[in-house]
Amino acid sequence: MKRLWEKVNQMSLRTRLMISVIICILLPWVSTFIVSNYFTKDVLEQRAAAQSEDDLRMIELGIRNIFDDIMYTSNYIQFDSNMSQLLKSHELINADSPTIKQEIALNYIHISNELSSITELLMPLYITILFENDLYYNNYSLVNFDPLQFKETSWFEKVESLSFYETYWLGAHDNYIQSEKDTYPYLLTIGRRIQQANSSNIYLIISLKENEIRRLFSQYQIEKRAKFYLTNRNGEVYSSLNTDEIGTTLPYELRDSDYQIVNFEEEKHLMVSYPVSYSDWRLVSLVPYKDTIGSINMVTRTTILIQGGFLVLFLIGLIMLVREFTKPIIRLNSVTKAIKKGDLSARIQLSGSNDVAQLGHSFNHMLDTIEEMIEQIKIQEEAKRNAELDMLQAQINPHFLFNVLNAIRLKIKMEGNNGSASLIYSLSALLRMTINRNNAFIPLDEEISIVKHYVELMNFRHQHDVVLKIDVGEIASAINVPRFFLQPVIENAIIHGNNNRKETIQISAAEQINTHLKLYITDNGKGMDKVTLKQLQERVYQTTNQQYDKNDQSFNGIGLQNVYQRMKLVYGDDFHMGIDSNEGVGTTVIFHIPVHKG
Image 1 (spheres, helix red, strand yellow):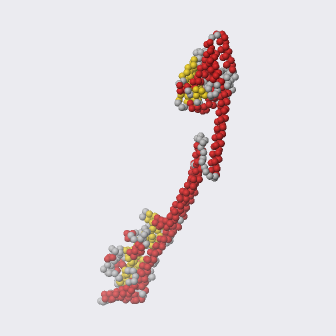
Image 2: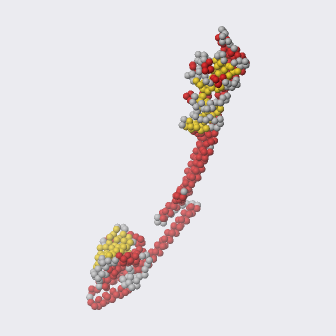
Image 3: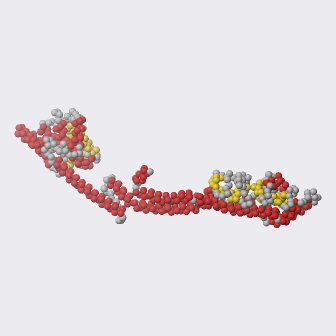
């Protein structure tokens, strides 16, 4: 979390504002979407269950009408007085009577006529009335089925054990009417024991075609993937749109109330059951969970998505406003980066009088002030540098001039020859160069000319035999360099490098075009050991100014340290000077002078 916060703090203000806007807009919407789905899940399921229960209630209403017909027919046969009289007379037919067939046929006609008054108005039913004397009445052809076969079935014993007011409900079973078995493979049947006064038992069996129930299911499954079943309490299927499922058992516990979420055919389904009138049978609906919840939840999701669309549009507009409002800050940041790189001329262009614009104007004013101050400092530093150069160049040791002039006077007096004219010329040229300070920079060849006059005077004064060799090309000779920067180096080589032998000092140059002039001053003097060289380098390269040695009898009293400091003043960090020496071999001073500074 801490690292994340550090990364956020490293982002620009615009990015942080945009992220904040996105989070503040989208997070509540996403939270609303998630919470809405989570908390409304039960409500939606309950609504879906209620809708499925309404469908089952309507189907049950249709089944009740069918069962009403069955029960009405059953009650009519049991309780109607005319029907009871016919049944009693049918029961009293003597099986040994020679006219038994005529009696049965006549009674059969009377019963059929009596039942036709109600059965013609009701749903088609298979009606069978069995008497204990193996006589029977039926409304279907005996060619298709012998009613006495009912007594051989396993469930008939349960009918025999019923009281006269009880009804046995037999679930789906194979159609016993062979001619209709292919068209109507299954029947639903009830059985009752009719108790007649002062008579034996009479059994009533009424069967209904299962497709009548299936027809009700199909009316509610036109536009749905729902599955409807008529089952007993254990889940054994009595009716279904898929006849292959009849006789199978649903692997779920059927509850009297509430709904269940079950897996059916590898898909989650919402299962609702509803009781059926007259029996302990139940209606069961299995609706794909996605269909039922999706259809109910579609309006909610559509509303949320529409809200999300408006929020996205609002978010885009807000981001555009944030970008527009933060443009001045971005410009200020770019100007700050440009100034950081050294471009002090960069300015922020803002219009208006708001707080950010006022900040930009103040920033520009501050930059103007800084530029003016820098320009003043440059002028002051330039004046200071010129003053220091003038001061350094003005430090001419009068003892040197006195001794040289005295030596020339003695030589002329003692020898009386004109050979010393060249010495006087060299001295006058040297004095002229020191007096003329109009130009702080002169071409390298003029600086070398000064060094030549100086070496000639030093050879005369100290009776040395110093040979000066020059290896400088025409291009390097024309490069401007500071006045009198070579003389102290040559003087140092003559005074401190003398090893009582003929000394040679070589000046060579190598120019790297448009970058640096590399100048070598090499002598073959006594040199110095590593320790002494290191001490010399530390003394020369130190940044603090040192007082000049008053006992230094050099031409101008300027040593290597002062030369280094002077060149640093002129060229800054672009200037480099190196010192190398080997004891008994000699010393080399290397100058790296920027060409563009000349």
